[in-house]
Image 1 (cartoon, rainbow over the protein chains, first blue to last red):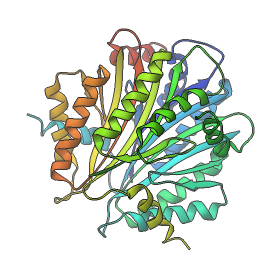
Image 2: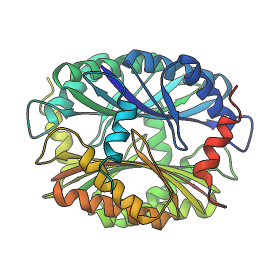
Image 3: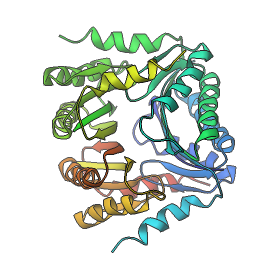
Image 4: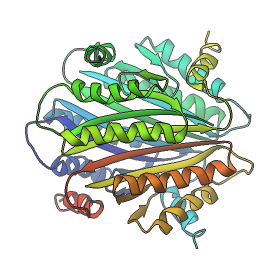
Length: 100
Length: 100
Length: 100
Length: 100
């Protein structure tokens, strides 16, 4: 099984002001430390792995942000498919090959 | 802590054709049996509970659908806030009170 | 053509504090005044109509909120299908009929 | 104003089978031809521009896919902010600078 997941998290209530970058960086550090393949984008981070692996990482991101912020918003989309991994890269390649 | 979550799930590959309703009903039966407060809508189902309770229900929905479909897509948005529950109802009421 | 759309909008930067309800109510008033069928939920509002009708309403909500807030976040999911309208209700009914 | 938008589109009903890549490639070609800065990812494409520019491109993607598919699903998230563009790149850089 391969799950490719795009994940976004940010605080809705917090003590500090300004950029969300420190909060997002905290979550990304957790993702990076997990060892899962990931790709940071400007609207979310994509990961690939088993369902449980990814959900454990997302829970750790949630808990870490909620420890410092009274209210947190997060969204995810999951593409879960039978078969081999490596889809995070192959999905992009298969589209790029078709472009003029 | 109260998590209000909107959740959508449907197959991207399947043996049958036509309406998604049987697949969505299978997921909704799992949500209903969980005992969590929920509201079925035309674009997703909203639930409220602890983070772990909700994620266990969503995993059960995912696993049940993947057992019958080679590829599944799901999305969710989570509003996680310190304090009491009952927000699934209060959030709607607080907006309706402000409408003319 | 029938588009069923779930739509969520809230400020990421604003002058006031506390509840998002006044900001959400402003958007909902615009949706209500549009005359489109809609359903307010705790994680978003569902509308049904032609693609252009709905996108005009969403743009009005965006512009109104951005007039008072330096940064706005919005999400939507669109289910666009050939054929008759009335799907906002039928989609829910067809699932409920299958529940035990 | 700068809008950074992540956008996903795929068919729910179609004549062909198998990979979504040809359908996604059709949408990506429209995005590419628009001249807007974009980044193709495995779960969606991010664009940056004015609100109206981006929504015109998304409508063109929707209309092109619906011309060949009876039912289409699309999601987007919009981060709309006062001030200069270039945020699609800066948002990622500001997080990467904070990582160990």
